Image (tube, rainbow, N blue to C red; front, side, top):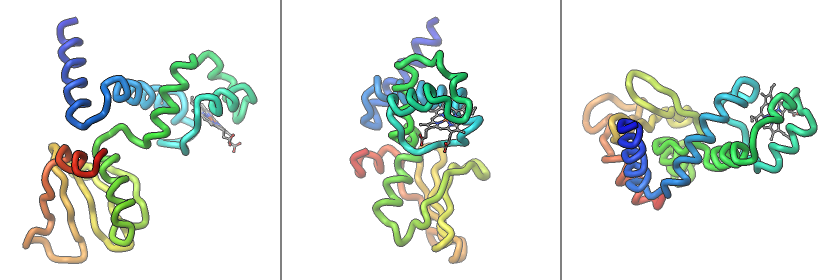
Length: 167
Ligand code: HEC
C-alpha cells in the first residue's frame, strides 16, 4: 500500500513536471493499457483518433467481431479515446511528434518510435537522421555524417524541450 502511494506520488510529480494534469496523465496511462489489452491484437499499435461514441458504435455494429468488447464501460472507452487522441502520453513521442511538425523537411517521412541499443528513437529515412532519447535527454544523430564533432549531439533534457515546445 505504501509502495503504491509512493508510486502514485511520483507519477503525479512527473505529470506535473511535464505540464500534464495528473488526472489526464492517469487516464492516458489507463487508456494505453486498455487499448493494448483489448484492441492492439487486431488493430496493431495504434489506430487513428476515434471518440468513445465512435468506438461504442463500432462495437454495437460488431465491426470485425468487436461485439466481444460489449462489456467495456463508457469510462474505459473514454480513456481509450483520450489515448488515441494524444498519440502517446509518452513524453518522447509527444516531443518527436512536435519536432516532426516543426521541422518537416528535416524529419521526414513521419516515423514510428523503436527501442534500439538502449535508445528510444525515430529514424527519418529521407534525411537519414535520428531523434533519440535516453535517460531523460534528447539526442540528434546525422547518419550521413561521420561520428564525432557533436554527432550525435546532446540537445538537453526532455523536460526542457517539452516546456519550450509548450507541450
Ligand atoms: C477481434 C478483432 C478486433 C478487436 C479486438 C477490436 N477491433 Fe476494432 N475493428 C476490427 C475490425 C476488423 C474493424 C473493421 C475495419 C473496417 O471495417 O474497415 C474494426 C473497426 C473499428 C472501428 C471503426 C472504424 C470505422 O471506420 O468505423 C473502431 C473505431 C475500432 N475498431 C476501434 C477499436 C477499439 C478502440 C478496440 C478496443 C477497445 C477495438 N477496435 C478492438 C477488429 C477489432
